[in-house]
Image (cartoon, rainbow, N blue to C red; front, side):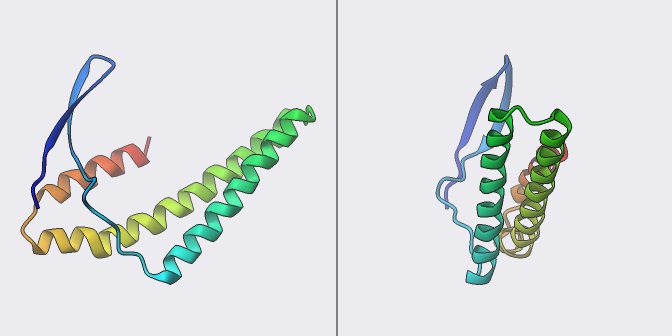
Length: 113
């Protein structure tokens, strides 16, 4: 599998990233169902926030709902990260692809912002 480098100019800084358009995840049906259920719930919560804003709900109530959504998204991220490390990362390491460590490190930095 050939890996290409892409140079992105984000706010005048150049960052190298590997294209991953040819890779796919290998999630079990159980994991997909769990993630889909969680994301559907989050989608409903976001629509609920829109309704709260349309109805001029008290700001603290809206902020609490936003906090709940952020927590739910963090839960989805944790599941995906764990699955990624157990499958994709291990597979690539076994193939001798050490670039996966840098990729994982960059992903985790973004997640911790």
